[in-house]
Length: 284
Image (tube, rainbow, N blue to C red; front, side, top):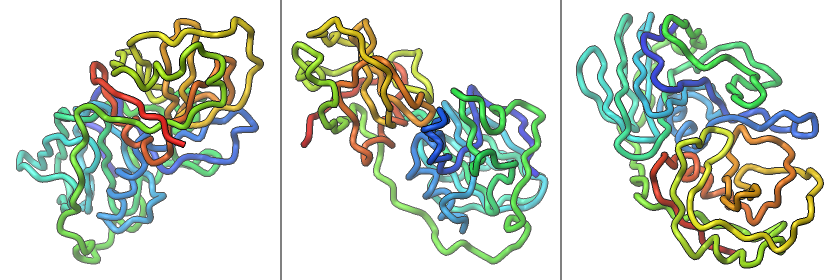
């Protein structure tokens, strides 16, 4: 078991999500930065779809009730195990009773912790992910919670086989590639999207990244019937300021989508933090 001593601003259980239920109104959910979660799992010898922890702005402290291999990836932050500092993107062995403390990231927003065996909470619709929009899966963690760990964590098969994984630093001002449409023609000049730097608004969350900047002007005042939404969709509400949909986004929406962030850049979108600047670049 893992005991939550401090939960930080927001810590949730996440895996690769629950695809295949959008027609029922159930979001995909899952880690906002999937490659970081997958890397953490690989570092401790888990399959990539094992459940781990996603920390928003760090700040958590966890006590391991049994010795286990753990790894921390994603947004860089200080790691202390019983007061001793450790590095990121590397497997580390923590003894029974060890206190793992995670600080505040210096760049990026979301950090991932994997433990060998995975977080073994009860799956809902085939996933252990916390979905903040539809309230599926386990609740966000609070102090005093106890998380079960899969049986593999109780066995010591030696080092997982990797000392440290090289990971590229997160850019200070990311550029997200966008495919135009499907409602780009609803705007006077959709090129405004790529012609400026937007600032990430404080109201952003796992549902979507809200942006501040020059609004996109609508070319039509018509109403749009609700249509399907995908992760990465840039939906534009009446104020003209785009919202980048993330993992917990609704499956349908009635505001026009000016473009969609390409799948390869979604992890960068998931690491955007309030006050950070971001740019967009149109691609075909």
